[in-house]
Image (cartoon, rainbow, N blue to C red):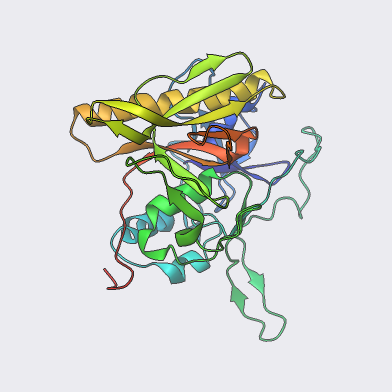
Length: 307
């Protein structure tokens, strides 16, 4: 499982976020669909494998849990629209980005209250009809779930999306791929993305400079100008630095392996950042929640023809 719910704060936690924690509570998470205990895996900061969550082998998900249904929706979403399912699935296609500065302070020794133990996938009763209906799309606390949705559901990119600082309000309009035919000037903020270059990011004091496989080529052999993401980590903790570095390195290595096996998977870097006015090949960023690396295959259906 890519994400789980914190038993105490009730927040959804991405597997990669475990890299950022000074100490991981092995018993502090549950399935976001049915509440059974799930356990962090591969979260050691020295482990270059994506962290995730797993349930006990002999413990099935509870009746009504839609985890298996989500996997089927993801599979169908690659071939056509699954908008109706996404509208009632809290986790698959976030409707907005909400940046939370601090996690709620919760005593881990305190037994969760009945209000705390209600899950996002719980149904709620309509006041008018007394009917039970599922909750709708949730907010994301980083761009990673949003970027996964962009990759997974190419036929549903006209769905609404609200990201602070980004004027465009759909998945289709909010995302912008950086090309390889020159360095462009962008008049407004977007969720920019490009393939991650094979070269490792460079440490420069408090800055991390990430090379992208986009920009201006010379004879298709070398870059004249190469887009880069310049990350200011001066106010970051050691764990935040490790989390971003590990995520990038895992994606880079997965991309290299995919290329060797002729796989269509590619490592992409997504980020919400300001383009440097003096050096437009650079994008400046200082918030770890506004950058992520995701390995996947991005397709571009023809919305005009419906294909």
